[in-house]
Length: 222
Image (cartoon, rainbow, N blue to C red):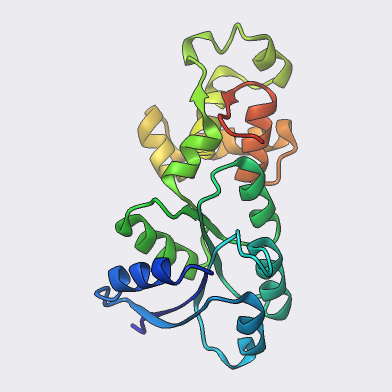
C-alpha cells in the first residue's frame, strides 16, 4: 500500500515544523512539501503529486476558503482537509460548501489528525471531535423533546431526533443501531425520513436544521 502524500499550506513555519515532526514517524504518511504562501503554492500546483492538502484558513495573502475553492476548481478530485483555529459554524459551513472533505482544529491530538488524513484520503467526510462539540453545543435533554414546541414544529418524532443527533456526530448506521439498540435497516428508514422532513442535503444541512429548531444550541455562531 502506497503512503498518503501530504502537502501543507500554512503561514506559520513553526506550526508546520511541529506537525511534520509528529507525522514523520507515521509509516502510512509521506510529507511531500509545504508552502507559507498560498499564491506561491498555486504556481507549483500542477507539478505536485498530492493525496491530501492540509489548508489553514487565516492566511494574510489569501484565505483558506478561497484557496480550497481554487484547488478544487483546478483539480475536482483533490482532497482538502482544513486544519485551523477557527471553531465556529460559519467557517465549517463555508469550507464544506467549497468541497472540503475534512475540518479539524489545530488543537486536536496527533492521533485524530492522522485519522482525519486517512479518512479524507479515502474520500470520506471527517469533522474533528472538538469542532463537533462546539457546533453542537449542549444537547437538549431527550426526555423533554416530545414536549418542546420547536420539536413539534419540526415534525420529527422523538426517535428521529435521537437519530438526528447521532447523525450530526458523523456516526454510521451501524454505530447508531448499536447505540439505540435498533437494526441498521431501521436506522436507514429513520435517516431517509429525517432528510425528507428537513429537506437537508446531508449532515451539514442537518447541523443547521438542528440549531434552527433548538434541537442543539451552538456555542459559537458569530
